[in-house]
Image 1: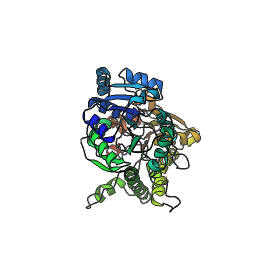
Image 2 (image 1 turned 120 degrees about the vertical axis):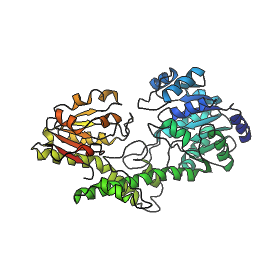
Image 3 (image 1 turned 30 degrees about the horizontal axis):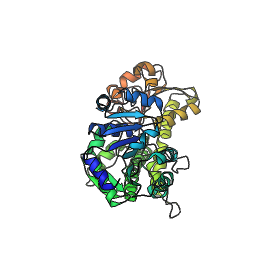
Image 4 (image 1 turned 45 degrees about the vertical axis):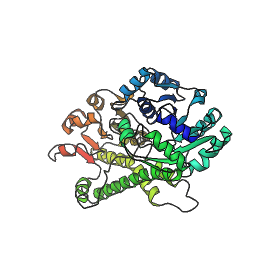
Length: 438
């Protein structure tokens, strides 16, 4: 199949689309193309997830507006089905790859899932099919890993036997469908013609700019934009630590800094989590180590990684003021997901904090309204604890106030990692309150 033939099939919505990896990115992507009128096949290695999806049940438990309804409708209409069988990919014209691309403890990419997909996909890939990697990858990965693996496993040459591109997603939990529809995309093709065909494809689901370019630019843009955010958060966190050291208030400082033209100081907080920001800065610099040694990006990562332990230190010091050793303390953690109103626990700062407390001998209990094993009545769970530590700004916690927390605590210690209780703090009350940057 020639690339112009593929374009005609896309324009007529006759192209058959497959999405490999049905997680936070792949599932909504598959549903959106099915909604647009394409026949969509989803592939995932987790049988339970596939079964749920085929029943019209979303495996994503966080608050995702519209996703449950959209999945149910496209399954009922017959435009979307899921499978664990790679052989079903043999008649697919377009294959989107949406698998995890983590980094290891050495901060280098660990493309286990991506390599497995390329190995399994190669022998069944239809001649003339278009393969698009939507996962975030280090610059040069398309050139040095994806292309050679596909050529080896298909026995075909690029732009003859198959076409290849990279269109990194720009979504976040809680806004998956909204981001897919309204946020611009960088569309990288292994040839200009492929990039243009990809624009033609994504116009069916994206109501925003689609910028055609080459693969290296697409890889650089996605990793750079997340590294940019990480560095800015690290700056806010370091200013917060400075404010604590000199008895300042980072929240007032931030407010006034941002009145200066061109300034946008980010929010400091208890840590940075999720699948993207903790790893994408490492992906950005993964293939430059032989050329130069980056300094700013690793420093930002170190600052942000330290914030959960800083919360631990604030808690330890507050307990010591009441004569309680951390090893004898009973501590309640509010929020275990990395993001408010989400069930996504990937790289959760709370996980780091919980491990720190337990390593010191403390008893730790966790509440999170979006994670079934940590659900329940929040005030019942924190009852008789020595301290409560707020780590995630879930909507449910915004209805709480300091007095309600103090009433049920054994000792009145509140550590606020997201600054949601500060407006209710009173110096006349008999409790200890600590917040980032104050």
